[in-house]
Amino acid sequence: MAIIPSTYSVVFWDPSDRLYITANQANVNTTDTAYTMQDIIDTVGGGGGVISIASGGTGQTTAQAAIDALTQAGAASGGDLLQNNGGSVVFVPGIQVTGYQMVQVFQWVDGTPVAYTNWTSGVASNLPFNPIEVTKGSTNAPGPTAYTDFGWTCVNAVGGTAGEVATFTLGADGSGTWKISTTQHWFDQTNQVEVRVSLNVNGTIIDVIDNKSTELTGDKIFNGYLVQSLVAGDTIQVEVEFAGGGISPFPSDTGNRPTEITFERVSQ
Image (cartoon, rainbow, N blue to C red; front, side):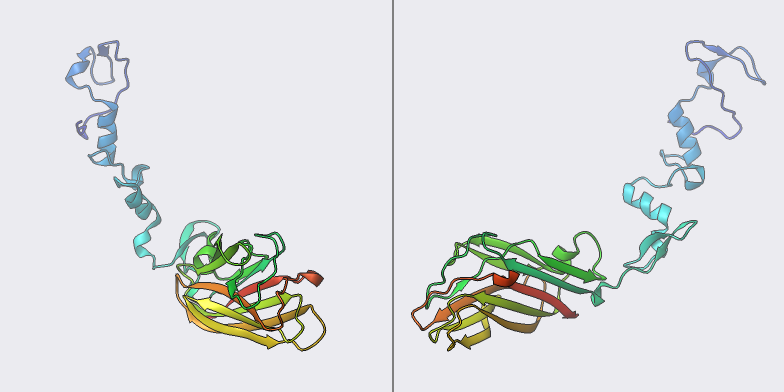
């Protein structure tokens, strides 16, 4: 490769014809001053195969450096976003995700992920849940992966009374204070049966419902919640145990209200 002297002019010619004519010279052997297309590119770019922005290139040799040069990324601040202002593409302040809000609701509906079954009296076991939220919403949590990065994901594994147990894991950007609520809906809440519902937070059992039924009605809804500061990677499981009465209660979803768990971010 060579840089074409600035005193030269570029003439395109048929390489099968060893003679060409210009306004300044005639019948000159082309091998004396022949340059390749790469030489032209190098000349325009200033050498090394790099074409300047002014000449239609980027002035860079790598993809990242080219993007930085074209967008003037060096003048932007961390978290800034590119935006069209109606005439040009400019950097604008990004969303402050530290102040985001989010809610996710997961349910256990009969057959999803597994069928309802009687809960053996005196045996504590974790619940399964549908890994797809029945309800979700967020404010200021950006991107298509907002719920996996800033919220909770649910994975079921083999085990427990129902045959599967759910584990919820907080995403990499989800640290903050969360309100975790659970609604429990069960038949057979009679004969002095006591229900205990706990949240297993990273292996620590924290009770959120403890109720004893003395009535004759058998279909009941219980609610409990926990507010706690949590960090990325923390896990939650929901444990249910019935004691006394000699009864093994059965899950209920009457009135379109199955057992569920709700995650609500309340502060950073």
